[in-house]
Image (cartoon, rainbow, N blue to C red; front, side, top):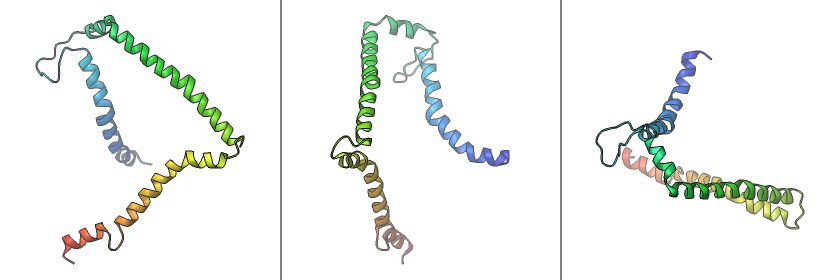
Length: 140
């Protein structure tokens, strides 16, 4: 593929990525090194690592960090192994109603797609709302 065509295809996604992901990250890092308050406005005064020094010396920070580490630890070392064990039990059909449980687990994934497909089909039927809107605006 030629470079201009490649850039034309990649540029929109890159621009959206930079606007939605990269810009807020860079802006947040810049804010963390200043005493600027976006709610009050005013000057951007560079304070360096003072904000981080204040954060680390606050006992609430350490309490919140401990709580977050507990949540992450329970998630990683609790939920993931339990999920794998249950999946293995269903895969090996160690339970009598394993087909029912497999269906119950995967039904929400398929059901939303089916409902969206039905809604789109109804929207674009000959007497559906989209057709009526087009008739209303075109005068037919």
